[in-house]
Amino acid sequence: MNKQEVIKEATRKYDEAYMKRTPKSRAALEAATRVLPGGDSRIATFYYPYPIFLDKGNGCRITDIDGNEYLDFHNCYTALIHGHAYPPVVEATREVVGKFATSLGAPTTLITEWAETLCKRVESVETVRFCNSGSEAGMMAMRTARAFTGRNKILKIEGGYNGAYDTVVHPPNSAGLPKSVQTDQLTVPFNDKEAASRVIHENKDELACMVVEGMMGAAGQIPPQNGYLEYLRKTTQENGVLLVLDEVMCFRLDYGGIQRIYGIKPDLTMFGKIIGGGFPVGGWGGRKEIMELFDPIKGKELIQESPGLPAMARLFHGGTFNANPVVATAGRIMLEHLTEKEIERINRLGESLAAGIKSIFSNLKIKSQVTGLGSLLNLHFTQESVVDFKTAQTGRKELMHLVHLGLLERGIFIPARGLFALSTQIGEKEIDVAIKAMEDVMTELKPIIEEAWPELIG
Ligand code: PLP
Image 1 (tube, protein in one colour):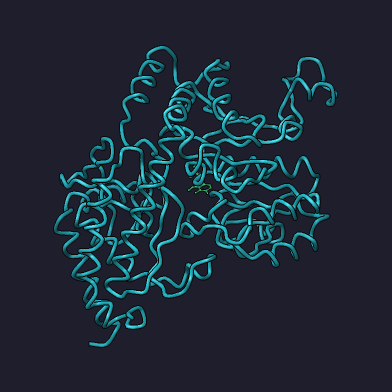
Image 2 (image 1 turned 30 degrees about the horizontal axis):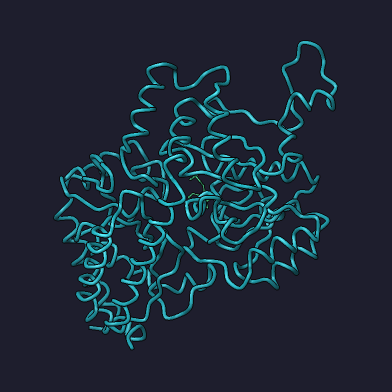
């Protein structure tokens, strides 16, 4: 057999074993696609041959509708920091639902408590506003930066994911986007100081902000290198360009977010995922003088209002379900329970999982990478060192597919792209189980790798 035939045959075998174990999920997808294109409402949940459909989750364990149990290292792409059905969140939100409707026509003090808990942790965030997704947070952060600077262009990281909103979506030539996205969105590779410096200098009079994640997430948990974030902070500041740090994924890495790890103070920060305690959420905040654009009390001094017109801020932000009592409660509780000690504990567990996987690769002489920081790590089946989107793309996708299905077969649930995101419900025992599963999968796959990807052996 040639290399392609070896890959095809291995894929057929792994797919077949998967389908044998998950017939109800297969049928569920068929039914779903009759009313939902793709069978869901979220592209990221799909993988080949089809995703498992879930029945329930508890702590660090989930069960699919075929009754298969998995240890959850997916945690909804990092969002479920306390795992499934976390009792303190379940109890508190149940109480709130019993007291209120889930959306109200007036604020509650629950929102203030939630915002205070967040602002206390993140030094650069003096004030914050909430919305319903990280994508919305990105949309609003970009709008805020444009309104504050009076400029239009946005600089982002090549291949970086800052949400599904037009201005920052990847790739900028996706179908359905207005042409203005291509002219207003500039990109530079991650970890490339020179490229960032050049583009910022050349465009500073038109550039509203640079948006960057502290560690590239969707591209495969790629940490910043050689003072990259610190350099971006300095260069944007020197050129009067706002720095927007996307902490939607990275916030979990430190009590004060990844910005505290690297000692930087962005002008604006985007939040999402964990800050909602498992409910739909987004938020963005930062310097008071910027966020004041949303204040109708201050706005009144600046905007000529006609009597009888609704209150106006200089910058509009609406949303029926923004900061509803359920998410405000769940979010506050999640933050209160995510103590400095718990973050350190799961970061250490993440590091021992990464070390365990690296030693499997090394013992089996498989050239591959494990990237990430603390409780977030990602596999890359490439001999290249992964520092940005392009190098991450050199990973062998067919091999990742086999590893993914091999781990599912052994009861380890991760996203198809090789991410491991730990929750606080994980302990050393579960890490050992994951390492053993990884060892079994890689040992089983070694003869296939030798034939199909010999360049990864040695
Ligand atoms: N920013 C980052 C870094 C993300 O990882 C995501 C989602 O994965 C988003 C923004 C968008 O968040 P949401 O999916 O809540 O819209």
